[in-house]
Length: 401
Ligand code: ADP
Ligand code: MG
Image (cartoon, rainbow, N blue to C red):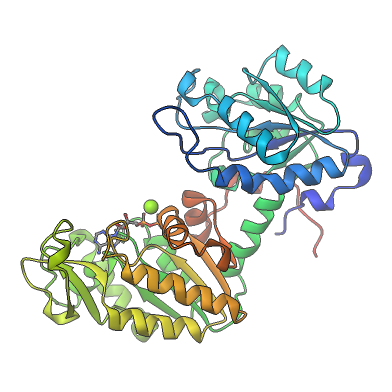
């Protein structure tokens, strides 16, 4: 079901109204409380700008960190208010409470072209328990609700889901719309050939994604430590590689059921340990030394995966191919990122999901060369597993477009 978006609002629903906007400003902070990456703030700007353009006054809510239901100065959104002002070139009014008379008054006093940012929603005990009393109270802060916090949409919290029971219209913001559009293609009607590249450290965290995607893809290419659990199922020596013993049977069943659709790396870059980078070398997959670990896919694999990417029309990537944090074990991941960038240019739809995968693409400087890099790690995984996201389900259904 398509959800109604901020673009679908009628003039009388938005002009002159207070728009309560839930965003994901959960930015990384360093020890001094400085924002080290403002990607998430930038990602919310188009929705805020659109609301301003349409005559609405945005009242913005977000969580930051895990303060566990009580105020904690180190998770204050105050530094975010400052950065938001710089990026938006608008006056930001920051109120250091969330569910308060002061916040309500500030929302009513807000002027055109200003933004009201309220304090961290997770300072409130009712946020994570999705307390209806809190939801009702938050609903007074706006005349309509816009959810642009895709990264928090898998949580049924008062400010992500509960509030929309008391405040209509309730629509998706532009970032949310974009996430649902691109990730939706992966589980809906992707243009074929459609391939998925799956990696990362563990099968256990990804098994539902694998099972959801296997019936839909033309091919699934596996990398990361997860490949080693499959190797074990094939009876290959995996040395000191990360293997999930309790998932070996499952890996065997997947191989038996899906056969050729499931591709495993032909070669591996191995070393005695992650620290011993100068000892890194490549071996065929049936020759992993007993006292070494697979830390990346090998160059032959990187090449054949890149060829597969080049021949596909839709490519979904989740999970690094190796320990990309430590060169040279980043080579396989980099090769995939580059092949995806080339494919995008040639007209393929390229989608990256997962926190570490997104970090790897950013590290390669190729973010802008993907069709879409998801901003939601956990939320994108749950979406790809086919789960309903509470923060999405709660929104108004849209007219078929
Ligand atoms: P994402 O966040 O994109 O979903 P994951 O969290 O599943 O990805 O996996 C990322 C982690 O997997 C990285 O920290 C990376 O170092 C690790 N990893 C990938 N390949 C291997 C490997 N061969 N051995 C050990 N760790 C690996
Ligand atoms: Mg991760």
